[in-house]
Length: 108
Image 1: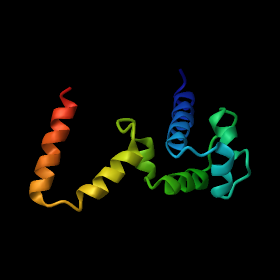
Image 2: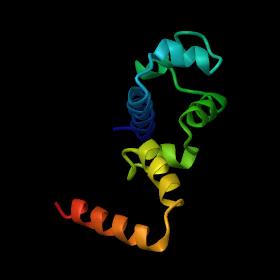
Image 3: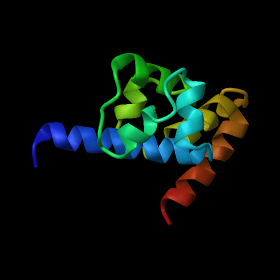
Image 4: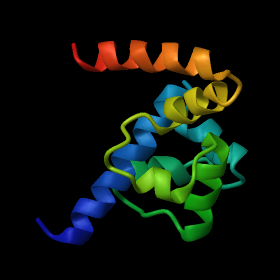
């Protein structure tokens, strides 16, 4: 498979996945980002690719960086960012407890 096709498919699937976490329609999100109502639908259906400005706006809406968007090892970048923000509020003992819980869950 051509590398460009793989990247285009990754972008498309990532946008679909992230949008579904917010339970917002492609049309509504397109409009909220300042684009035509069918902008995101065109991308999600493989008929177009986002511009750099479009990708930046999309990432900003979801509170992630472009790097996080393209990080294939992060299936849930929004959830991870939310967790990290909450972890920053904990003290050392609380962090140790959370760490133990995460290790147990990850070992399942």
